[in-house]
Every structure is written in structure tokens, then in C-alpha cells.
View 1 (tube, helix red, strand yellow):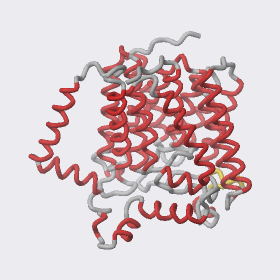
View 2 (view 1 turned 135 degrees about the horizontal axis):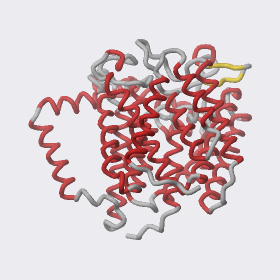
View 3 (view 1 turned 180 degrees about the vertical axis):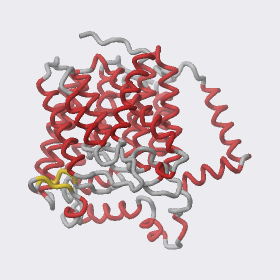
Length: 461
């Protein structure tokens, strides 16, 4: 079946359906389970429908609108449908017919090697095999599902990115009315906006991903370019209210990579035709001048960076104490301690010291299987070495390098979006959390990889 060309009308209709779905998920106690049940029924169709159900379901698990927010994981009523959706989507992707391609073969080889390393680590290295085993299996099947769906919908790559953008737009539409309300800040208070999500960091990181998808789709769909750019700007603008510095860091990293890529290519293959370099320079200069001249703008920037003085790192003269009290300092120090004790093979995939003792309070068990056992490690390179050691990291690194090389073949913009998506893990490590937002990260990475592999070779600088 040939893909249809999306229009503004179809884009609005699909966004409206997502607003309704996410609105149902906002119903306290039962909303998420109802929304996930709807998606489980819907995924049994064409591969594009399976993909949309899977990513929409991941977003549903992030939604919590109550006066007292709960941490991601939830109870069995949420966790069980979440995994049913993932495993059903994986099964659906495996039974669908697809033509083998060079990029698919390469991704599957890396996937097989990575899955093998993670399972071996879980069985023979991990300090908590029950947690590591389930996480290794769920991550491996989830990544296989995304690779399969990306190849099965390769001719609809732009449409799949469009759907990611529509999800972000739906979240912005539902979150905007909460800006003046206390419930929109219920997770942490103190000016940290979480909208319809369970946490400000979750909303900020999510909007980086969907904003990147919006801009990537805009360059692939000229007819919807203006609408998609407007959606992307709206999504990235809301990040300011979340005070999510991780999101800002990711966007900055993407911008740096974009500049490097454009310089390397000698200005070729850039898809930004409607904004000149002089316009961008004037806009940046004007913003800097405004920040210096108008105290309210300067204070807004300072508040964002400091998170309202809550985590001022200069609060103590001892820099080690200051680092440990910082936003991710304590996690970095813990990871360094783990690496020092377990350098080659790590402590165990998806676990950290204390995971076993925390199972009773932070985990969701079904027949003794830990369906949810969240950990918090906030810096991707160190957290990866801490979990799977140098050996496992040497498998992950070439995998990502290979994916990036494919993504950058499409354009400098896609290379930048790839790095921005990966960059959210440098302050909010969700890379291996396939049952949560980590799944959306891999969706973006794989789809940008496949998109690049279908493009011609990049012009050499």
C-alpha cells in the first residue's frame, strides 16, 4: 500500500486524536490503563500503526495529572499494560514481511552483539540477576522492535517523524492550560513546570525529542514545513518553564554539531533555505543585547541555569562537597566509585548498589519478576561503564558511531538532531530505559539512521 501524502488537515486530525488519547490518560487512577488498552487493540494492523501505538503508549506512561505526583513506574495497573504493548508490538514487527537491506543487516548485527553482551552480563556479572535479566530482555526486544518497524516503514520515514511531532504538539496543547495552575507544578513545586507529565525533567527531555522530530520532518515535508517549524518552536519554547537544563544542554550540543557539519561540508547539503546566516547572526546578537539591557530577561536566564538558586554550586567552599550536592554530582561520584571497583564488566545491567534492598519500595513485581525497578544515573558515559563495564561500552560505542555516520548522510540537520537526541542522556540517563522514555530516544536514533542510509553520500569538505 502506497503511503499517502500528509496534509495540514490530516496532521490536525491526528493531533486531535492524540489530544483525546492523552486526555483520557490524564484521568486519575484509571486513565493510563484505559489509554494503553486502546493502543494494545490498535497496534494489530499495518507496521506504521504498530509504530504509532508503541510510541504513543510510551508517552501515556509519562502522564500523571494529580495534586500529588507519583514517580514513573506506577503500580501494576500501569506497568503490566505497558509491557504487554511493547511485547505485542515486537511480535507484530517480527511476523511482518520486509525486504532485507544493507542498513538493516548492519543494525541487526550490532543488535545481536549488544543483546548477547547484555544477557551474559545479566546472568553472570550482575549483582541482581533478576532485575538485570528482565531489563536486558526487555531492552533487547524493544530495540529489535524499533529496528524492524523502522525498516518496515522506511518509505514512510517522514510520516513517522511527523507522528512524533504531533505527540509533542498534543502534550503542549494539554499542558499549556496548566501553566497558571498549581497542578502544573505539583511534582516539585518552586517554579518547575511538569505540565501533564509526572516530572519537569521528563517533560523537558520529551520536548527535545519531539521538537527534533518536528524539525526533521519539516525538512522532509516541504508542504508542511511552516506548520512543523511552528510546532517545533512551540515545543522547545515550553522547555524554559520546566527548568530542564539537560534539555538545554542537548539542544546546544546539537547546535554545535550542526555548525561543525556545515563547515565540514563547505556549506553544502544544508536544508535551511529560508533563514540566512546573517539573519541568524542578527537574531543571536539581538538576544544577547536584550539580555544585557533588560534585567527581566537576564534574571530569567539566570533562574533557568541556577534552577532558582536551589542548587547553587557555590554554596560551599569545598568543591568536592559542592559537586556532590549538585544536580548530578552525587550520581557522578557514585558511578566513579562503581567503575573503580568493577572496571571491566561493571556492576550489572540496569542496577546499582542498593537496587536489591530497594526492590520492596521502588519495584513492581509480578510472580517474582521485577517489571519496574528504576535507578537514577545521570551521565551516560559513566553510567554505561558502571553498569556493563569497559567491555560492554566497547560494544555500544561503535554501534552509536555507525548509526551517526548513517544519519549524517542525509543532512547536517539530521546529524545535529541525532546528537541532540543522544545528548539528553548526558544529564538524565534514560538510554537503557526502554519501558520509559528511553524507547523514544531509540526510536529517534534508529529512524534518523534509516533516513540517512536512504540518502546519497554526503559531499566531502
